[in-house]
Length: 280
Length: 171
Image 1 (cartoon, chains in turn red, purple):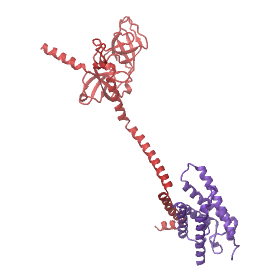
Image 2 (image 1 turned 90 degrees about the vertical axis):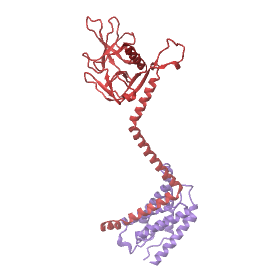
Image 3 (image 1 turned 120 degrees about the vertical axis):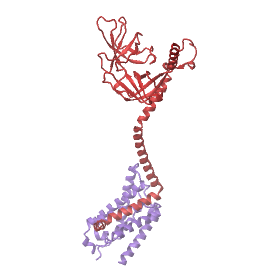
Image 4 (image 1 turned 180 degrees about the horizontal axis):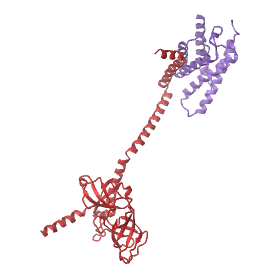
């Protein structure tokens, strides 16, 4: 304490200066409108900048929610696409699309578990029974198809990935309309490649042709892109060469997927149930 | 002692009077307005203690502010002036010399010392004053020119007035 007093008295001029200068500054700012406006403006500017920084930071934090909402919107838009409607133009060719009935609905889901390096790969998504997902539904993503729903719990569902030796998906070559089934495995464990089988020998397959879903299965609407032909694995003497397809979907970075709900699936099931009852 | 007080009081009144009623109306456009009232703080005796010097400087500034309608502006500048004055005197004047040289006047301290004393103190005072008045760096060129011209005018007037009341060393 004594030292403090000594220090203050030694540099008393400085402390006097500080005191009186601060008092005058306060007087200036309080009483002179121009300077007051200056102080207020600059502080407003500073505060504004601080808020802006904070806002930037906060918007970064909320990226996840923004992503979710965008993906949800994508799903909604997808369900308004032409391919999502049941095409009954054979009967009502001139009728406008008010008569079109929704055949496919898309449910957005986040991939919460994923693998690509196993022999049989599965995904887990964060949508389940509550959200209307049932066993056997098709799963796609923005760039291509992903797989088929395998098991469903209340909130989650497991998806048999395309990268699974059990998966067989009806696919066709867009240019030639030849159809076969897309498989993975069978000596090919590259997560970027799949095999298109059962394309007959006489169909000329060129590198770079598009492989799309055929629409013969009830899982996927027709015309969804799967990948491109990258070559053939011609085993001599076979009438069905394996066509190597480079997949559009990058399974390793999968984030959001869409589960396809075929609205007419229920109708079909009911129909099948009736015929089953009739059998008994 | 009482003589010193009376002389300083008269000087205070006269300088404030000149500043408020004469120099307020004198100026080279908006560029140059002299502030000769700081001569009062400049000429306070060496022995003035700090606890007296600072309030006096502050009050002087505040009085001028009252006339100029700018509360605090000149007071802040005068606080700076008083602070610079204590530093300057600490550096340049020996403490023992206070008995024979009681006041920082031209006739007593010599022209060279008084010249630098005036210039440095005036520059600091005007720097504070002009920049607090402008209160922004947006028109820095104008502010600097104004600062320069004001300082020149003030220094000129202070030196002139000191030459008028010039008295050779009184012993």
